[in-house]
Image (cartoon, rainbow, N blue to C red; front, side, top):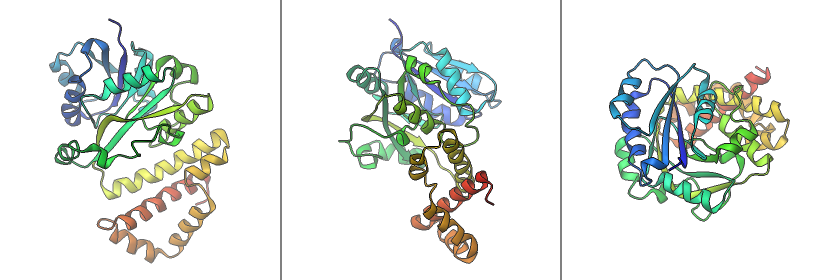
Length: 295
């Protein structure tokens, strides 16, 4: 039987996460002959290869290549995929047992289109076990939502026919660092006339505990990617959707001028969600300004 779905996972030195993640993908309700898992490794030195070999799974392949970022790793997966559909996820995302079967069902219902599933955020394995009892309570979108805009094309839980990925040009290797290589591909898919369907029952769990200081750095890098994204297309809708607008710039300038307010928010951020979001937004817009050469 031909492979229906190729699951593509970029990874680099994440064997501790893979020990939890890969078993959830190897134990799907879809028959193992109908899907393959392509682990696109950038030369890990933490025992990833040995762990993959120990699983002795016929439908799991390790593709080792140069470290060209997540875009390059995913493109390597696309190039080597044998499935009609390519499903993207990550090395820190745990899959519901029905994940692949539901993606396959949506592609049968909406052939030649993209599908995005329900990615639930969890901070620990304990939270994963708790949330998996009622994932709908933690969904990103309403279950009744049918179509998604390009800025929700997140490659933690997204699938596209392989021929369409090749047609639109796969992932842009210019998006290095952190952020937006997936959104930019979603933008191109919609621009080419394809739709992004939402599959709320196609659930996975993003086990992604990130510290406050680390996230501030990531937000700055995401700001750099936003400028790269806009300069590629010069579409004002990207500015509006991605927070690259005069109001955000003014707010960042205000907090830069009155640093004592920023410091106060920074001290509150670990415990107060609103303060944390404001601080993240400050660093995101700071990254935009850095990339634009304004500071």
